[in-house]
Length: 286
Image 1: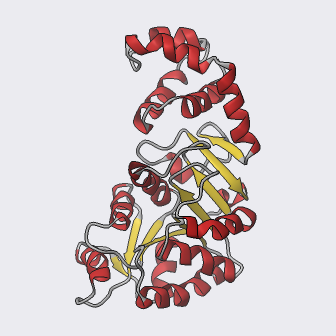
Image 2 (image 1 turned 45 degrees about the vertical axis):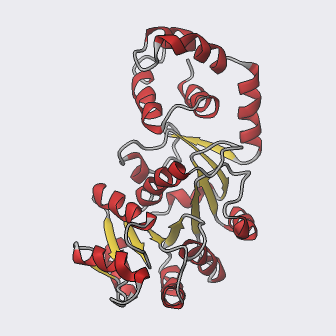
């Protein structure tokens, strides 16, 4: 079989989880001579009761049409492609397929920084981002964030406003905007930066998608910076994933009386580097 095509068919045509998708990739690359039907018939990764239905689905004309729709709306990048980022390939359970809109060459940038934080951003977080981003851009760092409301959105906006490069990793299909208030920003990033998604057209912004999305944000960069985060926030998951992959983590310290700084202060107490000035970022990235 053509392995690249098979990976895309599994991604678009099934509801198999990301771990199962990666296990399939690891297995089929060892037996590229098998057809789809032959591989499904022999693999232990698929339950016997599901094999006939899966074979029919993966070979259907309807699935071929759905893949074409995804290709026409942007582009498809697989783990087999030359443009697939080396850093991302190194993480636990890397995405086998990514859908994109925009400038794919941004993935080849060597100097990147993930900047994430609270959705309910305070004026302190806003001030910190607006102070930090011009220096980040001036030093030719590409920013990576999640296009969520609050910190994420402002990171993308400030990067573009300073004529910098930014990558947004979203937790739904490229044809969907979430949150709705970011529709104009998402369109601007598609034109001036890069939008990435692990999910095909029509995929809704489900809660578990954002946890999965966070591993991509952390995996694309050598360092992750958390601007503001409440205790147990999603940004802390991103930071934890970065640490798991032996990537650098920075956090902007805040008032002990601010709920939005509980998470960042905890990160610093646990060993994250306090982000006090631009040089802190540059030393962790360059």
